[in-house]
Length: 241
Image (tube, rainbow, N blue to C red; front, side, top):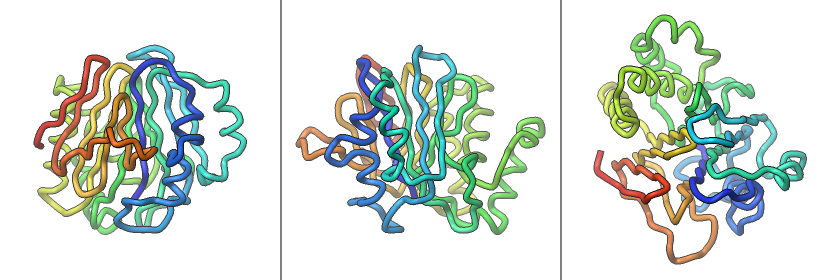
């Protein structure tokens, strides 16, 4: 399990949603209200933020729990962006605890996170999914995180011209054809956000998509299970997978 959060809207400070909101990412990582498994998300965290839509984002990842990362919290005072993707990690069983295993994963303009688990990933399912990754891309996989493999499968579809929401939905379908799991995928490019909800909590309000509401405002909408959400600066829509 993980907690993740994405923002797309007017330029804002990273510190607010990541650290200062009543139920910021740091707070919900340590004190989750909607988490199915695990009591905290202590295995590091990361954030990717955009200066320009469709440009490669800046990225920060660490093994330090987000609620203890006072160094980045201080740095975040000076960081502003109109688009970012962040995630706090509770590593899947069997996964190696290394910084490179933490979301968000980034390639080109894309940033990606998984809140969930692919059941059986360390015991054969992961190998099966890796065989579906093109050899050149498979050779560039760095670790044993299920998130990294799912991102590779999403990128393959994007490169083939599949629209982002359809690419996420196709990967979810392929995974669930061979195993079970909880598959909240989150993808951004600085211009739009795409998210699936399968098995774990997911909410949205205004320019924010998050595993949990960041405050008690009644405007939060719970995204339906087994759906995909597309958010642009023009609006947001949920549709069934």
